[in-house]
Image 1 (spheres, rainbow, N blue to C red):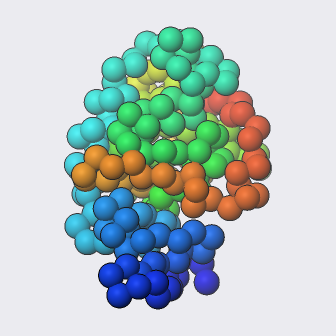
Image 2 (cartoon, rainbow, N blue to C red):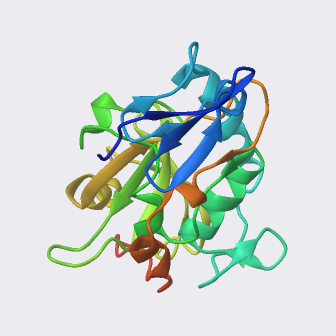
Image 3 (cartoon, helix red, strand yellow):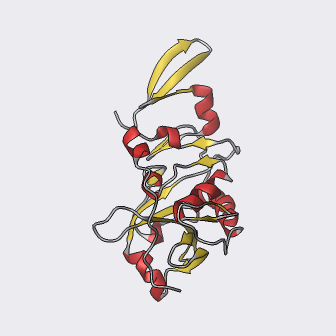
Length: 210
């Protein structure tokens, strides 16, 4: 049943569509353009380039903000997933709190930077360990993120010695496209209870120091 849609009759003027675990009015679906995995509901979903035009410049506003474990604010500092959650919230996308939860949202992308568009999320982990870090792909072979090893929100070039750590430890990539009409896209309520219960904060990245 995963990813399948079912029509549920209501009245001649209003009918509902069920995504596993949720009910959405047809009109609401057309408005918020829900994206669940590879399933797209509604026509004319905003293109990745349009999403990047908003997400990456928003992220750039916070360059230099100190890294803080558990941080979710530009005032007191960000950790990696707190930064991603904050940036996407500024673009009307509600993401879950941790990198492992964020790895369950949006559409899965190939684990190759060459396949990504600016604004895509990239997850990292040590070999055999759970996901512990998330960044935003910024295009031009760079990521922007709140880096524990870098001590702040910063860009990292994937072609450098430091950047090689991120290339070698990439374990997932997701595409989360903000709604073209500026309406809130709530991806948290599409997650299952087990995923939502995984609230352990991210340990960060283990890249070489800048």
